[in-house]
Amino acid sequence: MQNSNETALLVMDLQSSILQNLEDSTSLVNNVAQAIAKARTEKIPVIYVIVSFRPGAPEISESNKSFSRFNNKEMWTTEFLKQWEEIHPDVVPEEGEIVITKRRFSAFTGSDLEVVLRGQGIQHLVLTGISTSGVVLSTLREAADKDYQLTVIEDCCADRDAEVHQVLTTKVFPTQAKVIALNSWMS
Image (cartoon, rainbow, N blue to C red; front, top):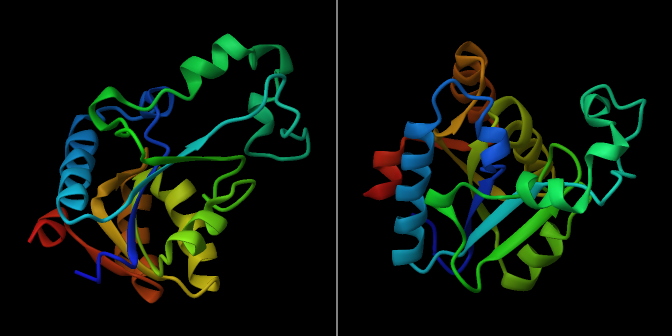
């Protein structure tokens, strides 16, 4: 494991509202909970990343193919946002842990993640989250371009399409990151 002073575990998009998109999120949530516990034991910062918008969702453009399906401005009320942003109860942040709000797929887009990472001297990111083809892929690509060292805990990521998850974790991600299983992270 990398020097814990330079490493952060990113827990991305583990919002209850997003986890509903998986047929069964139990093993993902359990695995991420174990990774979080290990990081806390090793004094590795756990940084949570959620996707959200302001009331009325002014950040969502009709021309954005992925996000425009959420372009019902009336839907994004303060009350709805409170439920939307809720992190799954089995992996909630502890007091003092940082929660970053992003506006697109990448954890960097529309967020202050990079400022937080620089402020903490973080050079190595360990990625977990849903979905493998969304936040994990986009964050990995951008982080690699920013010269971060990267690790993906393969079984702490999930995608609605198991084949896409497998292709990304076995063929695409290894070109820019170390891809490991949870049991390797734990040892």
